[in-house]
Amino acid sequence: MNTSITRHTLAVLVDNEAGVLSRVARLFSGKGYNIESLAVGTTHDPAVSRITIEVITDERQARLICNQLRKLICVHSVKRLSSERAIRRELVLIKVSAPTHEVRNEVIQIANIFRSSIIDVSTGTITLAVIGDDSKAEAIQNLLSEFGILELVRTGTVALERGQYTIDEQTKEKGEFDYGKNVL
Image (cartoon, rainbow, N blue to C red; front, side, top):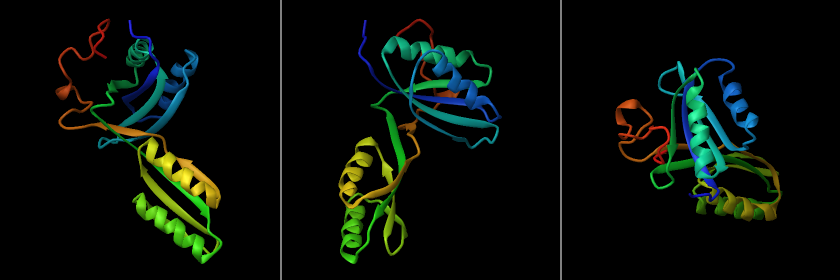
């Protein structure tokens, strides 16, 4: 039995209604699981929202969480995204102190290296938008910390599977959601 604790990314399609996110979050807190990352938004269907949840658990706990999510009436679909087949991204906004022309130039050079966007400039600050995985966000944050990070906000991870795989019923792999099997 695999008892290693790892990060699991869950994609959950739910009704786009008031209170649904609260019900989903209560499921995690009621069982004592900490949500590491949470991102929610409507899909191409305005009646459906997609929640991307990251949780650190072992395999058994991840299967249990998926099964419990599926029992909620507001949940349409639940899929665990494998790290090998998932594209994971996060948006990070970072406001950095840049009181001099020289500091602004250094921050701009770092922004260019990380392919981030400069979204605001004032006489004393520069605000960057960084899109990438955890390691990219942490790397630029570490470099910019020497200039003085005034504010930082992260959206939480969003994820999609690569290629033809989707969360829709038509593309699910046969046996993917068989309860009791180790295929989740």
